[in-house]
Length: 521
Image 1: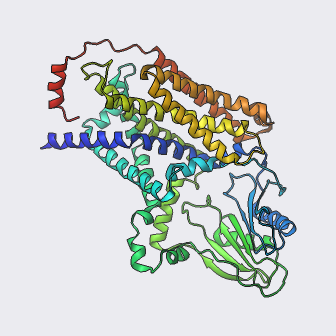
Image 2 (image 1 turned 135 degrees about the horizontal axis):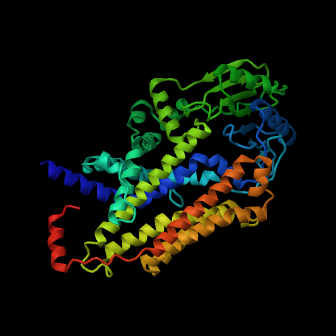
Image 3 (image 1 turned 90 degrees about the vertical axis):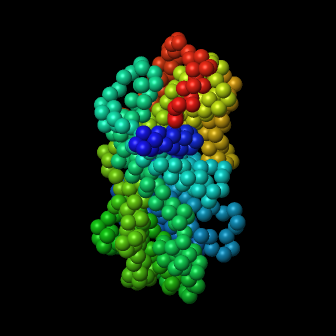
């Protein structure tokens, strides 16, 4: 019974990991990059410089700019993602009589000056991709990602049951041993970082739990919109009644920060310059583990508090904390680096598992040089996913520097370059033997990452040398990371290119058929 159960778990682990492994790898890679999405966005908008000295001064500068540039708007908004974000993003709702093509957003730098930043999704594209995918309706994309996450949990738990010597094997790594080496890499990356991988997978499901399990909402609310109005209130401007001066913003922001013991991250002004004006201050997303913002609403003419929202109920706090754990926005630089390293380990776990599937089965093929269609399909999808995705990300960064600044739809073109590069690797892997495609694709990704800091230095004034000279940590670390990734991928390409084919005796067709009948996996 024990043997049969373990074999069943091995079969479950193998096939849940394989069938959704390529999608899981993409989710892990883009999700891991998202731990530094703000830094990626800063690198991809080199025109924006400086971080406001404090939130109140930044919001004061934003209101002054909006009073000058959008005095007739019915709503002003200013947002910052926290201490890691350069400048503020402004939005406003145009007033009556405003031309339809009039701008409704702007970007301010750390000194409160408007900057014309290049159009880009920045790190937000990678963040959104890891749960919304792209070119797919968001609702169905989140169902696909949820199914993959549930399969991941199944694969993790069944993998724990399958490995009889999981702890002992963790302390072993035997390089150059083919299948044994890949199994060692798979075991080490999964066991050492198992708590993180379980946490990030489960909390990822929790973030979208209201979509996967909406019955609690349906049972208590006549309409789903009512639930969201209670959970995440979003007041709208009232009917205007007459002009009145807006109270100073800085004291309101400072009062909200004293109330929370944390910095502010958002400001909304409804009906500015009217007696019905409201000023809504929200907490920054990186101030605590809980992801849901707290808000204080002030009367815009007197400065009195008229409403407060803090999702502190048991269920809301639990959900919000799990989302915060998943996103990691609360993390310090050191903790975020640990998040990143753990995410990389998850990528290694998934990638090594996919490669192990082909390595293990190639030795059992009656004719290893002429594998069946299913084996070839897995091999080529492995190349496209594991080597193609890093190349696509590097091309995304290169497109940010090389595309003309004023071109229409620039952000979409950057994303288009990402998918063109990824698709090109898939086509290349189909057209070429896998033994040649692996070093070629890995080498191309290494060259692309190596080009990123070079092209950046040639197209902007924020080169690696300049960043190191001026103490620009974000740009210096980003460019250095590109060099490290290029070196790692280049080493992998050389390693694969120098690998000699396995010349061991190949099983004949009869013995292969007999062994296939007796093995569960």
